[in-house]
Image (cartoon, rainbow, N blue to C red; front, side, top):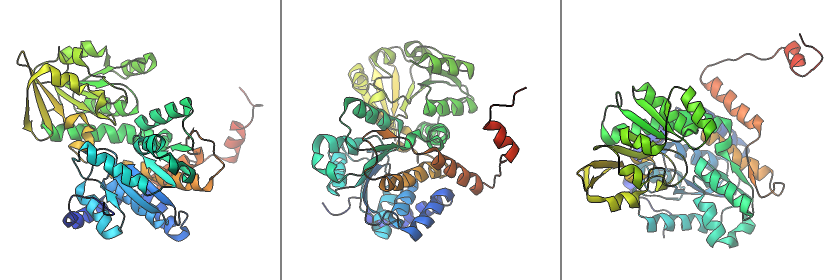
Length: 419
């Protein structure tokens, strides 16, 4: 394979403009890139990144390269690549990219192999596929590995399971666990971009519809909030009693999925688990029900069960697979059950990815600074890094906040004063 595999290098100029448009909304990453250019903290460091290949990711790749990194970028999902962005990174930045929107499974894993063949010292994952491939098939690379970073909830779940089973042999920074990532990216980014994806794929009116949201983690909270804001009647399904209680007190109806399946118009999953929507749910859904997923992998919807139950499959619009049941009901699956915000839309807005990718850039620097000092387990970035990113974002937004006076600081750090 050549040192890249993209759809068409002729798209590069369009991609360059898209990357620069995104950069305008990413001031924190811009500041980090400027420092990296001066200090070159990643000089010669080999990084293999398995992330969604978007304009926002391109700005992260440019920042890492500015810091001296020798990097390779591959797609973390077959439908999430922006082909013009991939071409621009190859053509203008000379960063090897292996990513084509709509690539089949064979190509997807061939691209993962290219990332591992780079012999990385740091891996960046969005779903833990690179780490899993290394642990299962390329253990020869482990001796050279400084550590890894992980972008999303699903990947963190997998990594913590690896640590629990004793197979994780290197440190991993769970970027997803940073407050400036999951409180903002997961909630506001996923909330907006998921509804954007559903609307682009279907052109349906959300107002007046019953939207069923699977789960009530940070991603699902954002989806529920934005659905309600667009005028939907929102139902939340959960397995955690605390989260279910929170959803109820946030004003949403809460019930088991099989009950919600009977009355929902639009179903959106974002849990990180398999078969959130299953055969028993498909059996009772309304004619015309819309089914989408915003979790990392397409396993949240039991697509094999849907395929078995259908007597016909059509494609009435791009990004919609319509399954006709034996009783004539039509169930509409969006984006092949993959991340709908990236399958039919453009993913998270640049402004929110600014903080997420600031965390990624600083995580790589953190791993390198602490080479040989960290145990093989899952870490969060230090709290001061979170605060630094938040402060930079506030400054970029033109917002000022209060600071403690000496008297207030003394009060908070003492126990003598009471009523």
